[in-house]
Image (cartoon, rainbow, N blue to C red; front, side, top):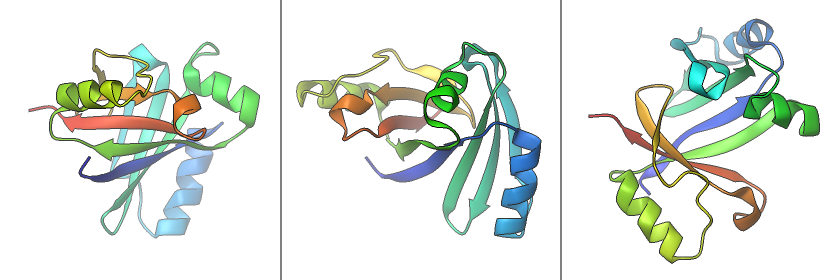
Length: 133
């Protein structure tokens, strides 16, 4: 793993949260995107080298909707940048981690993504991110 790529925050209302984070960081989101396959709309903010992804559910069956229903708004995941997502999935599987999707899928912000089950990572959902080349 190279670095923390971003921190994902589940929000009930993206427009309201965009206003809040724009005030917090003193700058608007640099990117907004919908990932229909995941049932989510996203906004990305930068603060120095750090990125925050806000996630709003677009349907009641999406993982974000279920997360907010169970836990309320808040930190949803921590994403780590990897150079080779397939090799990293294999390495982590061999270390005993439970991989939620062993075949990476297209995520927001031009990334291939895969997730580790939070039961094996002290309750934190971990996302692996590789830039699509």
